[in-house]
Image (cartoon, rainbow, N blue to C red; front, side, top):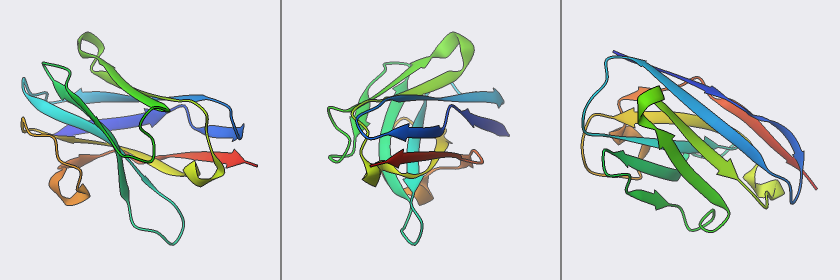
Length: 124
């Protein structure tokens, strides 16, 4: 089993920045993908960004490309999401997810492990 724990959410004004982190523990895999999803009230969970180990390949949703940066520290089993130029529409619960496969996918049902989520609220 893999346990994922997010941290770093909070309240920020539009145009501000936040950095989320996701710490993984338990069983680890040499080739895997970790991702961020988000879910706003009344909406479906949507893909934000993903990173693949060990080559570090990344993928982003169009809505965050150029504003958000996903990164990771393999030695610490920790993934990060740097969010800049935040907008009110970025308000959501952000979830960390992982899948023990080498292909990056952007659909939630393809991820096997999930964190509890962390709230991000962007005020206008």
